Amino acid sequence: MPKLDSFFDEIDLARVRRARELSEIKRSFVSLVADDIHGVASKAVVVLTYASWEGFYNECVRAYLRFLTESGGKVRDKDWMLLVSALNSDLESMRNRNHSTASRHDFVGKLRSKIECGYDSVESKAVEARSNLDFSRLSENYALLSFDLSSMQAVRNRLDKELVGWRHAVAHGDSPDLTAMDIRAHVDFASSLLIMIADRFQYAMLERI
Image (cartoon, rainbow, N blue to C red; front, side, top):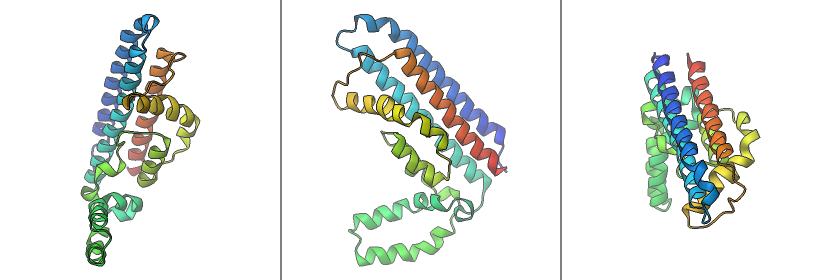
């Protein structure tokens, strides 16, 4: 049985570090906005804030999968949908071979052993952020992890528009209207999401004990 405290501490320490980074973003850029006629400071805040959101989520995913691996057992017994991740490379191989008859035969031939796999066969990238961690992507990942998504419903619109939408636009060279953006509120919103994500992963670990 894994040491629950060590995984809780890992997530807590990562969240505190991210929260401090966000606090520094707020401190550094709030005073620049008044004279920021080209919106450079606001765009920087959008990108840096999103990076903390995506980065922390991925840290939680990796910690959680290590926790499951140390817990032992077969994926199919408690996390049937995570087999999508365990089968990811095989599914990609079949797609790369244009779903030919031979590729399908190979896939089915390996299926029996893959269904009996442990958590060390789960690929984290299947449930990581992958550049745009909006509500839709989070919903897909939570479905694979068998997580309850209800706590995120209340922040869905703001997550998609402000945290992900603005960042996506800036990253692709567009200029979203950030004139009404409150840097303090934007950063504080991201900080609150980190707490929600940490709670979700830690609760999932606790349920396994």
